[in-house]
Amino acid sequence: MHQRIHHRAFTERLMSAEQAATFVKPGMTVAMSGFTGAGYPKAVPGALAKLIGDEHDAGRDFKINVLTGASTAPELDGVLAKAEGMNLRLPYMSDPELRRRINEGNMEYMDIHLSHVAQHAWFGFYGKIDLAIVEVVGVTAEGDLIPSSSVGNNKTWLEMADKVIIEVNSQQSAAMDGMHDVYYGTALPPHRKPIDLTTVRDRIGQKYLNVDVNKIVAVVETDAPDRLSPFAPVDATSEKIADHLLGFLDYEIRAGRLSEKLLPLQSGVGNIANAVLAGLARGGYKGLTAYTEVIQDGMLQLIKDGTIEFASATSFSLSEAGIAEFNKNVDHYRDRILLRAQEISNHPEIIRRLGCIALNGMIEADIYGNVNSTNVLGSHVMNGIGGSGDFARNGYLSVFMSPSTAKDGKISGIVPFASHVDHTEHDTMILITEQGLADLRGLSPKQRAQMIIDNCAHPDYRPLLQDYFDRARKESYGKHTPHLLGEALSWHERFRTTGDMRPAQ
Image (cartoon, rainbow, N blue to C red; front, side, top):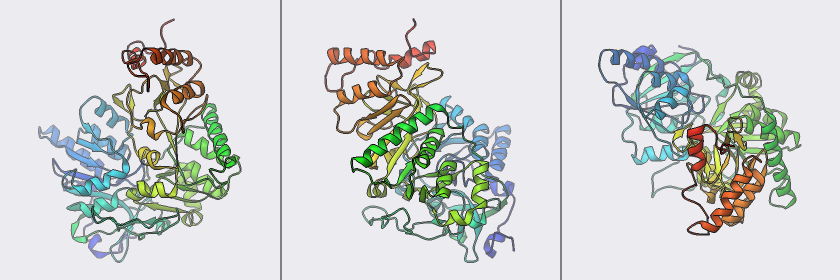
């Protein structure tokens, strides 16, 4: 009996990745595990990419539609993109090769709120799911699947797919057994019931993923790590942004709107998020909780030192050092971390009930607080909206953070009009750059604009924004949200043609 596989029906279906890949046929919709570089299949996608390449070389068309939990890694998104094997990809991505092909118009990409993916699949919006390829830690004697380092949409993929390929990865820590909470109580409208989750610690489901053994067509054993995600060191700009946020949280505590344990934190990924988390530790916070999507190195450290006493997520996203730390102290983390399906980790009802503090990054914001988190110059997609909308729209506080400039000052993070809007002004409460913080709660559009210009814009752009706003208040068609339509996107057009948003001197 293989070390991680304790059910005969699974061992009987053991085969190579190359053999398993032959179950994928052109035109299929294939759902794969993976969320932010964790828990994705490591072997079958590569074998499939080679198979697709061979078919193309023979003059035969071979493309599939690929659904995942979120971004994966070069071993999945990268190889399939290079092989030109994807017709459609959803819901979130970060692979450079995949991004290039999407922006060149060579394949379709559907960006969607992460909380919507599973339910839209169940609603039939994506058609039939032909095949699921899911990584797990192991298979129990009862035929249950021990989830891997991400749960994502795996429950839904296993339930909906006609056929299933399982990758059993011995590189993933067997000690993760018991760290998952898979909820099977969802139903289709109008038969839905309230989800009985009232604290981040609540277990509402079971430890394992279910699968109909009759669907299993292949089992592949692997021994490969998740994509290791080294994080850029925290820089001075990120520290200033973190300091502004921490000052705001202290103010909210003094005003009685937050307690010293705050409310459950949701944090995006990146060096700004890590700076914020490090600032919480420096600020002396203890006993905090997190209800979020991803646990990265910074949060792992806060769990270790007691700043965060419990974290609920759907995935890890750790560097090599973070993985080593987790494996070294897994018994400590097992009692303090719970991984859920993303339809629960990102569920609007739960986010609103718990009162999450949503902390997310952005590409740009305009003077009224509309936020663009996905598209450069309005049309060049970077990654996708991810779960930021799930939390920003439903959280107790919605905070968006970014440096005030990019590309050595040639791009302003605050613009007259966002070139693409993912989060409207109605869902944006707090904007922060290294220049300062704009608290937009309770303000009218014109009041918001002045607050953002005064507090968040870089000094090189502040006079330009003020000039635009002053003239718009006089000359615009309406005076509620004043805009000069002929100039609203002129900064983006100037950057596209000259490489700098600032007018030539």
